[in-house]
Length: 561
Picture 1 (cartoon, rainbow, N blue to C red):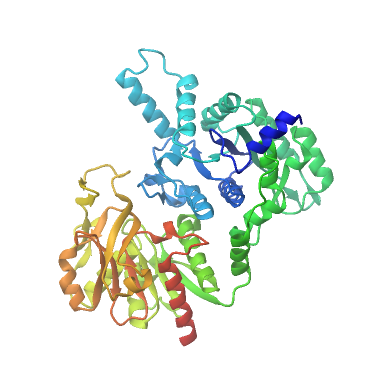
Picture 2: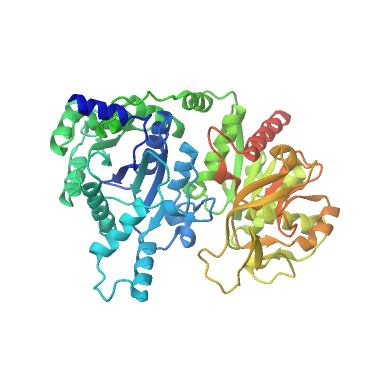
């Protein structure tokens, strides 16, 4: 390197911020579910640990405008951002690993891209020109990628799906163009691919990776780094073969084996030199070494627990646990906070609609009823809440789980016959009903029952005020909180007096006092229902106080039985 080039590299180090962010595009090949989102999140965490500022984005090729109306069976959970966007579950990984709050502008779908273009065309913005995939669709994608990045050093963009998918082609073309326009010092491509091990042959096969890269190169993208997901270590000969046929340096073939836990992934990838090679591709050879102290501490807490508690999750999507991804992680964070392993027992709520079906709950240390929509399994969730209340088992009801706990208290403690939710018909007493209006800042938001399902809920972060002396106030240690919501129905505050007389405490309300946010049972060791989704704000290095307290209560219960 010339003297001038070396001086430039020194100036353009982690300590000197670039004039614009560098972009890292993460694609996947061979099969889906290889862990692109986790790889992006782990790389973001490693760059952070070196002193860089990062932002992560997800480009989804499906035609839905947002994931909000998609079945959890198809898409996993819907992750909600602070500003009220319904997004892909990978944004949860991004937030948990980096602590950087995502926004509406960090997730885009083909549906939203086309909606934007059609709106422009209807307004006449294109002046009568023929609207085409290139340049109009690709330009809109590029605008999204480059827009509002903020004051960061790296923007990591994950492209959903796999290379070769028809619906993904506009996205691949857009990032190809960006690679050319930004230049080699501002944009690199990482390709996540599969190296299958054929047990019968006793061999690792490199051909799927070779073909995936060939497909990527056929549309004009040469990957800079290959992250190869595999079950066993990659032999040096296989690394050389992959490097040769895929046209990448040997040190850019990174081994991505399954880690002992999710939170070991940054450490594993760093050991493989993933972050070092990324920085090398950008010419950042003098970046500081990462400070991985907190990740080592989290790894130790996860892999060397002092005990174990069993938590029953009584839900309706229990056959696909990705529907509860953030919830699972928040429970693990609660375990980290208390130094214990959290074992989850997934139970379909419908089974508790039968009499004498409670044996699976007899030996658990805590019961959690998560959010959900629809009538199916609702009575089972009510029954689970009653079991927890009567047996003194720690109970955590989230969103729908809180509503069902209130209905249970109304029916069995307050004597309100026919108490139910208007979400599934017209109950005699609509204890839970559709919200028609609520405050957002200085404005009043209104919804009608006939409105669109997508994006018509109370979405995003809202404040609440806690009652001093309550369990909720004790857990949070403050009177004013802000939590993320995703719901259309709300407990009717008009029944507060009757319910509180029966022992249910409304310990958290919206600042105007109209919307119940937290309920708890007087005299119960730990029975808390919340209308919001606290799991969305939990981080491994900052466990949510409600989950930390719930797991602590479960530990105490395990000692008593």
